[in-house]
Length: 115
Image (cartoon, rainbow, N blue to C red; front, side):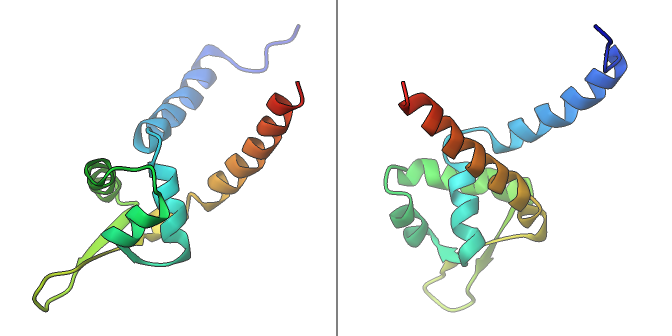
Protein backbone atom coordinates (compact mmCIF):
# COMPACT_ATOMS: atom_id res chain seq x y z
CA UNK A 1 0.00 0.00 0.00
CA UNK A 2 1.39 3.36 -1.06
CA UNK A 3 1.67 6.05 1.61
CA UNK A 4 -0.34 9.11 0.72
CA UNK A 5 1.09 11.30 3.44
CA UNK A 6 4.40 11.71 5.19
CA UNK A 7 4.52 12.12 8.96
CA UNK A 8 5.23 15.83 8.46
CA UNK A 9 2.21 16.22 6.16
CA UNK A 10 -0.03 14.51 8.70
CA UNK A 11 1.19 16.83 11.44
CA UNK A 12 0.49 19.90 9.30
CA UNK A 13 -3.05 18.58 8.81
CA UNK A 14 -3.66 17.59 12.43
CA UNK A 15 -2.72 20.91 14.07
CA UNK A 16 -5.19 23.16 12.20
CA UNK A 17 -8.00 20.62 12.69
CA UNK A 18 -7.14 20.43 16.39
CA UNK A 19 -7.23 24.23 16.57
CA UNK A 20 -10.64 24.33 14.86
CA UNK A 21 -12.09 21.69 17.18
CA UNK A 22 -10.73 23.59 20.18
CA UNK A 23 -12.51 26.79 19.06
CA UNK A 24 -15.80 25.04 18.18
CA UNK A 25 -15.70 22.56 21.06
CA UNK A 26 -18.91 22.00 22.91
CA UNK A 27 -22.51 21.21 22.29
CA UNK A 28 -23.75 24.74 21.69
CA UNK A 29 -21.28 26.86 19.72
CA UNK A 30 -22.35 25.71 16.28
CA UNK A 31 -26.03 26.10 17.21
CA UNK A 32 -25.35 29.69 18.29
CA UNK A 33 -23.43 30.43 15.08
CA UNK A 34 -26.24 28.93 12.97
CA UNK A 35 -28.80 31.15 14.72
CA UNK A 36 -26.69 34.26 14.21
CA UNK A 37 -26.18 33.40 10.54
CA UNK A 38 -29.84 34.19 9.96
CA UNK A 39 -30.11 37.36 12.02
CA UNK A 40 -28.60 39.38 14.83
CA UNK A 41 -30.10 38.44 18.19
CA UNK A 42 -30.23 39.53 21.76
CA UNK A 43 -29.42 37.12 24.58
CA UNK A 44 -33.00 36.15 25.41
CA UNK A 45 -33.87 35.47 21.78
CA UNK A 46 -30.84 33.18 21.44
CA UNK A 47 -31.86 31.36 24.62
CA UNK A 48 -35.36 30.89 23.18
CA UNK A 49 -33.99 29.57 19.88
CA UNK A 50 -31.87 26.97 21.70
CA UNK A 51 -34.29 25.79 24.40
CA UNK A 52 -32.03 23.23 26.11
CA UNK A 53 -29.20 25.69 26.81
CA UNK A 54 -28.99 27.31 30.23
CA UNK A 55 -28.42 31.05 30.56
CA UNK A 56 -25.09 30.41 32.26
CA UNK A 57 -23.89 28.13 29.44
CA UNK A 58 -25.13 30.54 26.76
CA UNK A 59 -23.23 33.38 28.41
CA UNK A 60 -20.06 31.28 28.60
CA UNK A 61 -20.31 30.15 24.97
CA UNK A 62 -20.99 33.69 23.74
CA UNK A 63 -17.88 34.97 25.54
CA UNK A 64 -15.75 32.22 24.00
CA UNK A 65 -17.14 32.85 20.52
CA UNK A 66 -16.46 36.56 20.94
CA UNK A 67 -12.91 35.87 22.17
CA UNK A 68 -12.30 33.82 19.03
CA UNK A 69 -13.68 36.64 16.83
CA UNK A 70 -16.56 34.53 15.50
CA UNK A 71 -19.26 36.81 16.90
CA UNK A 72 -19.52 40.46 17.90
CA UNK A 73 -21.38 41.91 20.88
CA UNK A 74 -22.83 45.37 20.40
CA UNK A 75 -24.01 47.44 23.34
CA UNK A 76 -26.80 49.97 22.82
CA UNK A 77 -25.95 53.44 24.13
CA UNK A 78 -29.40 53.96 25.65
CA UNK A 79 -30.38 52.89 29.15
CA UNK A 80 -31.09 50.16 29.94
CA UNK A 81 -28.15 48.75 28.05
CA UNK A 82 -29.04 46.09 25.54
CA UNK A 83 -26.62 43.62 24.07
CA UNK A 84 -27.01 42.31 20.56
CA UNK A 85 -24.92 39.54 19.06
CA UNK A 86 -23.99 39.19 15.40
CA UNK A 87 -21.78 36.87 13.42
CA UNK A 88 -18.51 38.32 12.12
CA UNK A 89 -17.01 37.78 8.68
CA UNK A 90 -14.63 35.34 10.34
CA UNK A 91 -17.64 33.47 11.75
CA UNK A 92 -19.30 33.50 8.34
CA UNK A 93 -16.22 31.78 6.93
CA UNK A 94 -17.47 28.63 8.71
CA UNK A 95 -20.55 28.50 6.47
CA UNK A 96 -19.26 25.72 4.19
CA UNK A 97 -18.09 23.70 7.19
CA UNK A 98 -21.55 23.96 8.77
CA UNK A 99 -23.24 22.99 5.49
CA UNK A 100 -21.00 19.92 5.18
CA UNK A 101 -21.59 18.98 8.83
CA UNK A 102 -25.32 19.29 8.19
CA UNK A 103 -25.11 16.96 5.19
CA UNK A 104 -22.97 14.48 7.08
CA UNK A 105 -25.29 14.64 10.10
CA UNK A 106 -28.31 13.79 7.93
CA UNK A 107 -26.49 10.82 6.41
CA UNK A 108 -25.25 9.71 9.80
CA UNK A 109 -28.74 9.80 11.31
CA UNK A 110 -30.02 7.80 8.34
CA UNK A 111 -27.24 5.24 8.81
CA UNK A 112 -27.80 4.91 12.54
CA UNK A 113 -31.59 4.70 12.36
CA UNK A 114 -31.73 2.16 9.54
CA UNK A 115 -30.48 -0.56 11.92
